[in-house]
Length: 203
Image (cartoon, rainbow, N blue to C red; front, side, top):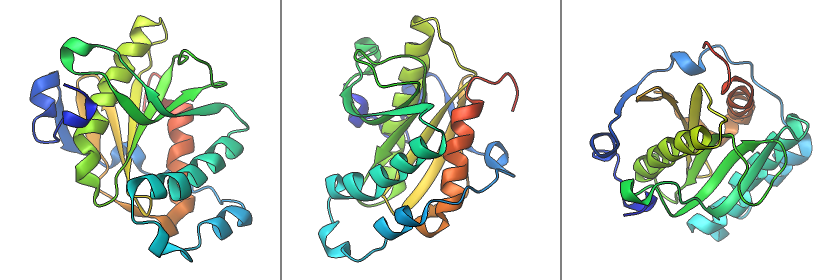
């Protein structure tokens, strides 16, 4: 079994976690204004070219993550398409679309991983099970590398629509709000919040 075999309806039972909706983790987060050049890059002039998961990842998602790195002064790094084999006996292995870490990119992947992201071409639920499995793997990876974090965050996105999750102990909560790309300032605000609160001891 691999990450992409997990389904959102069964991932909790298989990994011993519960799932629910809770917006309190992402309330009152300050929006962050993106640079004008980023807004220009995200203008939907070439929608007809962006019908595949790969195209959306390389255009919309990567552009947003480049702005995240800029806005955090390089304090976060993005691993894209890397193997992330953590515990094969649990099915926690395979390729992750995106892993968000602290510091500079290093190979092998440097802990801590504070968030994972899955990009899908159609709707958010199609990536939910995979994202949750990768969140559990990231927590285990951090623990094994002596860099435990209080939270592991998750992102599921179609490129145009973004959803956010948090793993807190053995519970995964998903924000009940889905954010359209035209709310990029709020999306950036949440991503930056994740990068600064993963290791905090309280919410």
